[in-house]
Length: 362
Image (tube, rainbow, N blue to C red; front, side, top):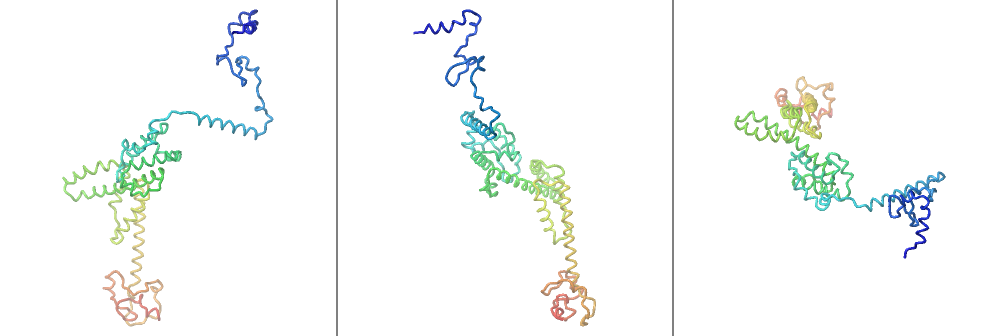
C-alpha cells in the first residue's frame, strides 16, 4: 500500500511555485545525485551542504601524518592496478608458453656468423610482436634488464633456437643469461666476419697466379659473400693492406703477422685503413728494434783483432756486456768462416773468448 500522506507532504512545497516541478531530483539518476555513506541520495546541487571531513586537509597535520596518507593512497592505487584485468596479447602468451616456436619465423644465424645483421633484424621483428610498444628491442641493451625472470628465460631459449648448434656449442655459454648470450654472439660474429673478410681478400690476391677463366668463376663465388659483409671502402683497403704487407725479416715474419692479427683482433669492428696502417707501422718498428738487438749480440761475439796466443792485458770493452753462461758460436756462419772457431784466449776450439770460462777465472 502506498503511503499517500507522505507523498502529499513531499509535493506540498511545489503547489505555490509550479516551475519547481520541472526538475525534480531523481534518486535513481547518477548524474544528479550522490549517495552518502548512510545510504541516502543527495542532489549534486546541494552537495556543498553535505558534512565533509576536513581533518585530512588541515594544515596543522605533521609531515609524518602526510607521509602516512600518501603511503595509504599509493597502496590503494597498487591494489587497483593488481585487481585490473588488462588485455593479454595472444602473441605474448604464446611466447611465454613456447618461445621456441618463434624460431620458425626467425632467420637462423649460420655457423660462421656472416648473416648476423639479418639475424638481428629478424629477432627484433619477432620481439616487436611480443612487446608491441618496443621497436628494435636488441639494439637497446637496457631492454634486457627490464625483463621479468620468466620473460628472460623465454628470450634466452629463443636466441638458442635461432643460432647454429655448432656455433652455440663453441660459445661455451651454458651459464649466460639472455643479455650476456646476445653480447657474446655479437662479439664472436664480429671477429669471425673480420677473419672471413681477410680470407676473401687473400683469395682475391691469389687470383693473379691462376687462369683467367678460373679466376672469373672464383670471383663470381666470392663477391656475393664479400658484399654480404657490407664493408666500407676504407675497411676493404685496410684488409688489402694487412694481406699484402710483410716484414723484410724472414725469421720474424710469422711473429709480425701474429702481432698485427692480435692487435686488430681486439677491435669490435673491421678496422679502417688508417688504423691498420698505424698498427702495421708500430709492428714494423718493433721488428727493426728486435733485429738491431740481435745484430748487437752477434757483433759482441766477433774475435778481437790481436794475434792468437797473445794475452790481452786490459779487459776489452766488449766484456762489459752480459753473455751466455754456455759456450757458443755466433748464429751467422759468415762470422765463423771469417774469424774461425778457436778461442783467442785459451786456444781451444768451439767457442770465442767472450764465452771462455778460463778468461772469466783470470
